Image (cartoon, rainbow, N blue to C red):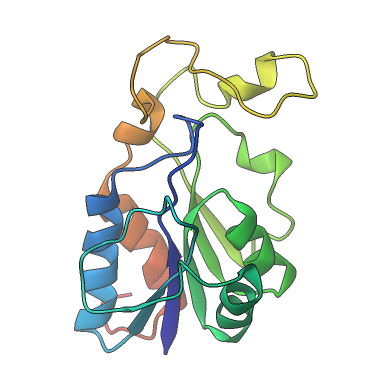
Length: 168
């Protein structure tokens, strides 16, 4: 089976996740026999693992890879929207965006969020339309606290719903 990852790097701190957390998930999947493909753009941070990378190619190549995979793992992004449109089972991390405003079918999308943070979904307090939002905690970092609080194990637990692994 093939899992496509989009680790991203956006101007939205509430969408960025430390790449090492995705790397942990990818290594878990590789350990149970999955092949990993990384998609994104020129600013995408790669996981530094054995994988196929299509980050410098056209969006059509990324979309083709996404449409043929068995699982998508990544940030709330255009590549995930492609996966969701193609009905690819997806595990997506959310921070400043409330997944209830994005997820079309919870049977094929497992959103992962930090637990117990009152500021989750803070983007929705801003009047739109806006192209990006800033963390309401005003932390000067490219990764918001709500994303830093997400643990690799949370993502791996969500991924297990789409694997045929004995421990899922």
